Structure formats: C-alpha cells, structure tokens
Amino acid sequence: MSHPTPAADVAAGRYPTATSVEDFARNLADVRARIAAAAERVGRDPADVRLLPVSKTVPGERIRLAVAAGCRELGENKVQEAARKHRELADLDVAWSVIGHLQTNKARDVAAFAAEFQALDSLRVAEALDRRLQAAGRPLDVYVQVNTSAEESKFGLEPAAVPDFLAELPRYSALRVRGFMTLAVFSDDEERVRACFRVLRDVRDRARDVDPDAVGPGDLSMGMSGDYETAVEEGATCVRVGQAIFGARATPDSLYWPGTVASDDGPVP
Ligand SMILES: *Cc1c(COP(=O)(O)O)cnc(C)c1O
Image (tube, rainbow, N blue to C red; front, top):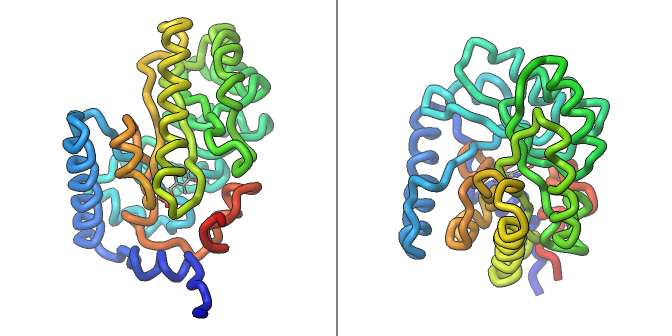
C-alpha cells in the first residue's frame, strides 16, 4: 500500500507557480480554452461564461504580472486581504470581488471597495451591507451562496431556504441580486461534484419560477480549478479559478472553508 500523496503536493505538480507575464498569459489562455471546450460540448456560448481569477494568498508583485497578462477582475476570499491588496494595487484598473463568508462587522470594508460580493448567506449580512452601501450612496452586485453539498460545508443557505430568503432581499435596495454561488463537494468523484452544480441550477430555476424578478439575471457562480469544466457543462456563468492561473497554494484550504474536509487531507471517502 502506498501512502496517499497529500493533495497540496498533487496541486503543486499540476499547477506550477506563475512567475512571469508569459506564464500568466499561457495559464489564462489554457483556462479559457478549456472553458470554451466545455461550453461547446453542451451547446453553450463560451462568451456566456465569465472567468474570475482568484488571487488569495498571492502577493502583490505577482498579481501585477497577472494584471499585465490581462486580468481585469480578481476574487479574494477574505475581506482584510482584499482590502489590503485594493490599497496596495490602487494604481491598477482592477475590480475586486469578495467571494468568501462575511461577518457583519466587515460590511463597511466591502461597501468601501468591492465591486461584487458572492457569499451572501444571511439577512444580518444583507442588512449590514445595505446600511453601509446606502451611506456610501452606491449599489453592490451580490450572489446568494447556497450549500449544495449538505454535510460538507458550513456556509451557504440550504436550498429549501432560498425562496424565503430571496423574498426578503428587496428590502435592501442597495443590493442587486445577480444570482447564486456555491462550492461543490471536494471529491474525486465527478458525479458527486456534478450533482452539487445541478442543485444550484435547480435552485435558480425554481426561484425564477416563483419570482423572476427576485433572481436578477440568474447567474450561477460555480466551479474552481479542479472542477470548472464540469461546472460549465452544468450551466456556470462565472467560474472562480485560482490555482490553475496563479499556481498551487501552500496554505490549506481549511483556512478558507472551515467545516469542509480540506483538500490537503485527500478526497472525502
Ligand atoms: C479559493 C477559492 C476559489 C478558487 O479555488 P482554486 O482551487 O484556487 O481554483 C473559488 N472560490 C472560493 C470561494 C475560494 O475561496
């Protein structure tokens, strides 16, 4: 019996660190080509899929190379890290998307600099954000995060709770609902991953049936480095890709997704 290779080591081999504009240009072209191929497999227009590069843990100097290679928007999981990079890189033309769980006491920071927030999962956060945004006199695009893997993840609304949640959101008029976001289960079993993406699409379709106005354009933000092609096949309109563009992360994913089985611990049995 061989020892299982930690997923972080596997990722390090699969995703070498990008250290030049050429590296980034090549990685971006590769990811875009894979998105296009996945879209075409299911008869979708590749132009309907937005690539959101995720720069968490990546230092400012390397982000500058990615921007030079064509990144115009960047996703960050943690608000403080995003706010710091927004300040450090203020000379660049980049839109920042916050894609991780938010605590109400950080709502002010999001309202100050973020172009988008993809992890809305409570009315308390909606209220806090709306208050700060009203004060700042600006709207914010938001995605409702849904827990499509049930037992695996701590964040996101249960699918059954989504309709009632959406019905409350018009009270927060600075929030512009774009659609839904999810993290699939961390698994090598593609069918389990695909099932999560189908749950999100289903949530969107049902919510649309109840009230088309409540879901905005009904975008689906789903798919990361390990599963974005599957997500595109299942209807993703935004994929959030970090490691396949920037290179493997040294930090364990459990830092960002408490409650999930970290991918460095190997696949979920
Ligand atoms: C880090 C992160 C991603 C990207 O993950 P990669 O494995 O780097 O592609 C996507 N979504 C969220 C919410 C993240 O925190």
